[in-house]
Amino acid sequence: MKYKISFTLRLLVAIILLQSLYFKFGSHEQAIHVFSTLGVEPWGRFLLGGIELVLAIAILLPTTKSIANTLTGLLMIGAVGAHLFTPLGIVVRWNGQNDGGQLFIMGVAVIILCVIEMGIEKSNA
Image (cartoon, rainbow, N blue to C red; front, side):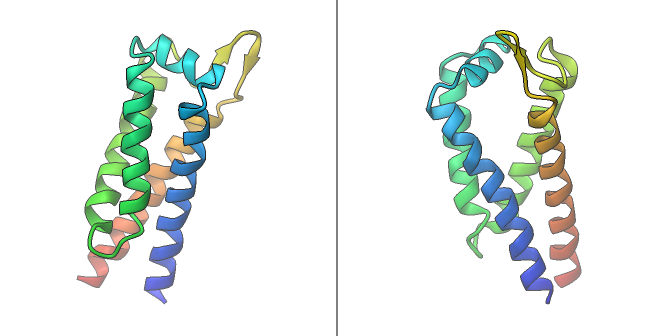
């Protein structure tokens, strides 16, 4: 049962990471705004997209799931920090539009899922 819960949590994290790649690699204006605000457009957008792609795959593989889970959690702590401590803000606003805080909420959700997964992994050890 723990295996199924663990895999489901990791699958949810992978789906969240993978769905964001459409925006990063597709040069969506929201993604361009986010990374321009952080001063790392375009290289930061592509680098982060590449890292998220690798982590999304690695988190599903039995041999790399623990390290990928840890790295994903840390990556999302950085993302949440960017929302909290830069002009980006919790609600991202660009060209008269806003995301209603969706990016921030997804980052927090991934952190929570990763922490729960770490607890499951620790209880299995």
